[in-house]
Length: 174
Image (cartoon, rainbow, N blue to C red):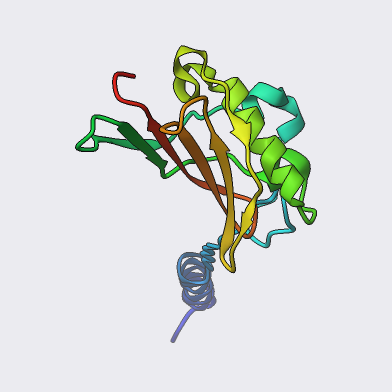
């Protein structure tokens, strides 16, 4: 005869085993990953909503060349040419907001970059004079000429207002 005690032990053991299995195996796990090419300071993004407020950077912070790659060469006549590429963080949208930018906006922004980075872009106190902005299907070029015919400084912006490249030509001996 099976005693009441052994039935209750069996039932208790079965309930405990069931709860143990459910407790260990019944958990759930959720993993999410989000990747997008979106600047939360300029547009509403799905993945990231954190924006470092550009107004906190001030004029210098919004125009300073801080991350870039530069290549340099001399032409056969001794003129010095530099090209700044992989420029990070310099954008009209970041500096002025996500609005449609005029040719004058591009020129003013490029002049700000020259002023803040004069030690790099205006060696020896070179005075740059803006020329008319050139508009292309994929971007804008803001050209500047210097004091001599050898001196050129060209800013290339993409259609969204990001500064993509700066090309600089200086006379021989500079």
